[in-house]
Length: 136
Image (cartoon, rainbow, N blue to C red; front, side, top):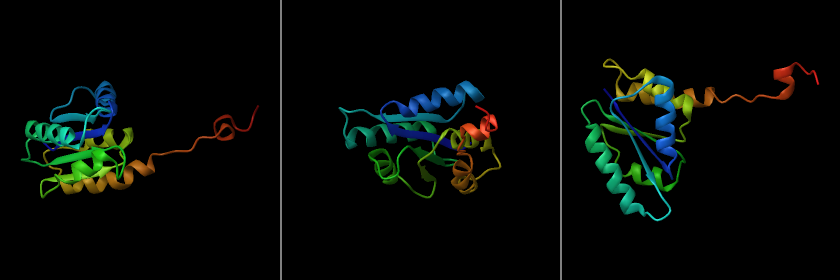
């Protein structure tokens, strides 16, 4: 099973993990790492490596980060390799798709390619008129 590692600023990664497991139930090979205001890049890199050891790389690891170009993204990018890929700027639809889409038949490349457009497709702009039919 592909390991999933969330890496975000503050406690966001753990919050996403908790929310996702509330929706889809407890998950295996699913870790969350954050960087706090008093922590530096070295602390984050150490936490990422520890989480990756817990996940193992047999089926690969997909790292999901909050902000493209932010410290979590930049530090995680240094750990990419043939069995480790990353998608930056994830949202809850992407996370749920990842958790429900990983199976013994799914490769890391397939899973990563699938979610690259999925998240954007599930950002929907709601307006008052669209929801209420223009009625006031």
